[in-house]
Structure formats: C-alpha cells, structure tokens
Length: 96
Length: 432
Image (tube, rainbow over all chains, first blue to last red; front, side):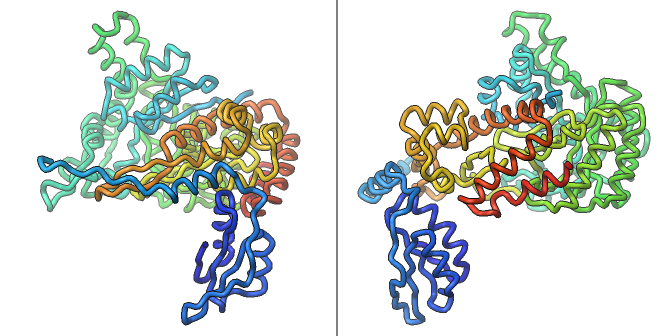
C-alpha cells in the first residue's frame, strides 16, 4: 500500500513500480484528496484505492488487479524476504 | 567523423571498467586523484597507454576559487578554529604554487592573488605537473617494470591551462584568457584550454563574447564545461545558447570537447563538437560546487530510447509484454542485457537488476540495499550503450537520428508518460 497525503500522481508512479513485484497494490489517500480525476487515474493502472477518514477509518473504493508488468521472479523474491527474517547485525566483540 | 570518446576516472574503484572496455579513445584523470595515489595512477595511465588510450589531466585549479568548504576534509578538524583541508588539495596547491598559504580552505582564491608573475609561475608549474608527474612516479618505480623506456613516453595528449569558472561577473574572464595565453607561450600546440562557465548566469551576449574571445589564436583545442547544465532538465534557451557557443567555436576552426556531456553533447557533434567526456556512472553534468553526501545513489538503468537513466522499478513497466527478442530491439541488446536475456528472458533481467543485499550501517544496523552486482551491471550496460551512441551519431544524418529519437520517445511516452522524454524535443530544436 502506497500512502500519500496529497500528491496522488506521485503515489501512482511509486505504486506502479510495486506492481512489478506484488499482485495487488493499493494507493491510500485522505478522503478529501481522492478526487474523481485521481480515482480514474488509479483505476486506469489497475491499482486499488483506499481512502482514509479523519478518524483513521479506511474504506476500499477500488479493488486492485494484477498488472501486466508483474514479474513472477520479483514476486517470489519479495515473498521469500517476507518469510525470512532479516539477518542479525554483526555484534561487536568486547575487545572492539 | 566519430567524436572523440573520453571517459573520466572518478574513483580508483572504477579502473576495472577501463580495463575491460574497448572502443573509447581517451581517459580524463583528475589531478587531485593523481595526488592521492600517484604510483597507482601512473601504472593505470601506463596500462591505458599500452591499450592505445591516451589521457589528459584535469588540473582542477577551479577548486581553489569556489566556496572553500569544497576542499575541506570530512574528517573532524583537529583544531576547531581551522577546517581540515583535504590532503590532496593541500599537496596540489603546493605543487601549483597557489598563493593562499594559511588561508587555503579559509577563503577562496581571487584574481588579486594572481599578479602576472604569480600567474606565470602557476601556469608553468601546472603544465609541468601534468607533463611530468606520472612519468616521474613511474621512473621512481621502474625496477618493478623492467622497461626503462616506458616512463619517458608517459605524457598527456594535451596540457590543460589552469582555469577558473567564469560567472560572467568579470571576475575570472580576463585571467582565464591570460592563463591560456601564458600556457600557449610555454607549451605551444600541446596546450588545450578549459572554458568553464556558469550556465545559470550565461546570457546570449556573454556567451557570444566568450566564443569570440576564444576563437582567436593561438589555442585550437578546448574542453568546455558548462557548470550546472543538466541536459535533461535545462531550458530550451540555455540549450540553444550552449549549442550556438559550440558552433561558433567550431566554425572558427577550434576543436571542442564537452568536458561533461551526455547524449545532447553528442548531438552537438552535428554542429562541430569533436569530443565528449563523461564518467563511468553517467557523469554527464557537474555543478560548480557539487552537493556532497547523501549516501550511495540507487542504481539506475540507461535506456537509449529515453537517452537517460530510469529507475530500475520502471523498467518492467517500460518493457510490459516484450519478449526477449522485442526487448533487444526496443530497449537494449548490449553484452550485459543480451546475456541476462539469454539466461531467462526479461523477467530474469529484471530480477538480476533488483538483487539486494544487507549491509551494516554506521550505527551497526543491517540495511537492505541494492547489491553491488547491480551497480556493476548497470554501469557496464551504460558504457556499452554510450559507445553505441558515439557510433550512432557518426553513422546517421541528423534528420535520420532525430526522426528515430522522436519515434522511440513516442513509444516510451506511451508507457512511462510524456514527462520521461520531454527533453528529446528540446534537444532536437536546440540543434536544428
């Protein structure tokens, strides 16, 4: 989910990159910024849209679809990273 | 005629690219890099010479006339009252005879510091440095080489006169010209000038005056550095001014090379530009006072249809629906891309360019960053593409090339948006 407070066109550019490695990608915007133009542009690219109210409640306005540029190898690699915890940072030895 | 292809060595780590590449002509070495590890640089220059690549040394004199913090070391000062100066710039100042003494790094050099006698000495020492420094270093290590004749031949193709960035406020214009004339007196046709000017302050009239001045004898070879000129984002007016400047000098019979240039500079070869210099990691522009710090920039992928780099994340969008053959014809068939495509098509290529690794931060945490291999792949890919572009401007007429550029830009715009190729139209207009 790509969250932006104001600039939905930047959110779309970033979310389209994520579509290369994720099956369903959403843009989250404050309800006030989810204009008709923003909704149309988001829909054109197969992105989902979540709108967030002042009180933090989110609603799904558009359902995401897999994009034509989804790369299966990138998706698999992203899934592997989510499943494998980040390695531990090397500990400094007491003498250091 | 194919423009002369210069590649600037930015760091020691970049040497491996030079040893594996063919097809470029010459190397640009920065004097401050030479001063930091002169023996290693001498051996590098010798290796290049054996592979038929000559070199020039950028004397980097402008560094003493810009904001003094540009030559400060990142290391913490030992004396809080006085900044620590980078050792290489300190050593270079001594070798050139820069008359700042204890004020080095405290204030910038001014024309008033350089009366005729002092300027003459600096010019002389600056040229001698370029001519002798690497050869002397090699001679000092000759026992490791076993070939006595090599050191004598290790001289640059041209000797560059000391230069300072002209901001068109009258500060450096006369002194730059004087330094060039003194250099020509001392070294004749071996001398080339560096015409460095702040592109942000350049007007039509100022550039026309500068071009007129440098069209005069006796110097015939110039490197041009339009500081802060970003080919991809600068205004059409600035591009046109730059193009006119090049054309005027070329029409006066001067051999002009862009000191930092990208594909727009290559297009200027249709107006008479004779050479383009760039770095291993693009290096098609340089600010007068480059911004330091900020960490390693993300790897970017050069796309010939864009004539610029794009984010690696945008590459799958650009290549949506292309198979390997179409990728080769539409985007790239360089040695790197060809091999990655052979191994597993476009998806394999995207995955190879999206490799990451964990690296410890200065705070001891691990951070996931693009893998080192990715930086290498995109640099080789860029260098192979740039090489092709030198051939492209040689073999195509401007009409053919500009039509091809427009067609390719239209295809890119349909996938990445018009903004990604907005510069193409501006470039064609500026050169037409």
